[in-house]
Length: 198
Ligand SMILES: C[S@@+](CC[C@H](N)C(=O)[O-])C[C@H]1O[C@@H](n2cnc3c(N)ncnc32)[C@H](O)[C@@H]1O
Image (tube, rainbow, N blue to C red; front, top):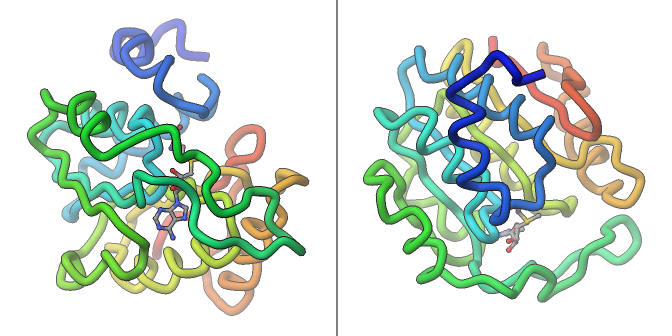
């Protein structure tokens, strides 16, 4: 799909070993970030882990501040009835290692700790692009509650794990949230969806 996209082919090898997200999904993230980069508003990612997709977006749109939210110490508490992941998963990372990985990305702003507790620092911002890769029901719901009202018209939210059978909390949080909204989640590629805010 990305054979003719030299910029993505240049960036993807930089992040391949630092992301859990396969190349087809990364290519969609890259494209949506580039589209959103033409709108007013900041960028954000919740669920950074080792920094792979964060670096992809930061490098694709170097003129956009990108706010990066993660505990950088593993998953918070999850609901065992709907969430596959549990507290402490993805703890093999650190704030220092991710800051080092993105040390040549001056547009990256780090917000370590539990989201949405860490969101207060950007409560006055508006957003053009948000990537949510948090795996569990409550975190996805908290991201929607916080970011959706702050998305600019034409802004884009991308969600990982939509309709992935193991992360049923993601689908539940998204479908519940958009049940009474104008927007409809659009499936982009395997287990990923996006919404255009209008
Ligand atoms: C699947 S990983 C993210 C993968 C990453 N985007 C990549 O490129 O590989 C999920 C991350 O979400 C983070 N996370 C989930 N819920 C969170 C919350 N409420 N606050 C902060 N971090 C959270 C976890 O700490 C974990 O690092």
